[in-house]
Length: 130
Image (cartoon, rainbow, N blue to C red; front, top):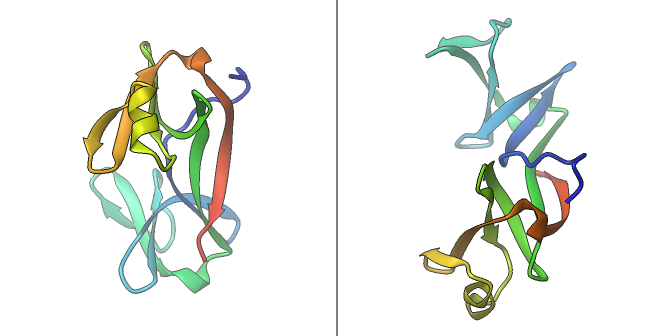
């Protein structure tokens, strides 16, 4: 893994005007934007500020996630700590996942913690939300 790419948690990010914000999807084509500082149009919410906007008001909305490959199979990086990378299998074979040492956390969902150097082709994906 390149030291230039630091794994990040997955999440939505939106662009409104000249600023980029962490975001969450709401009901009925609504998007909630978050800020650590008070901004016009944002309301206070337990130590942070938030604003709900309609999706069409945004310049763009993307899902950001860190992905890579472990054992030749695709994965998404969930977290990183002193034990290594906590990854989830994104392939299509439970048998392959189990053979690689993943454990089943839910039906069809597999996760494992592995040394950082065992995950290859790490990159940040920006998936546009239509």
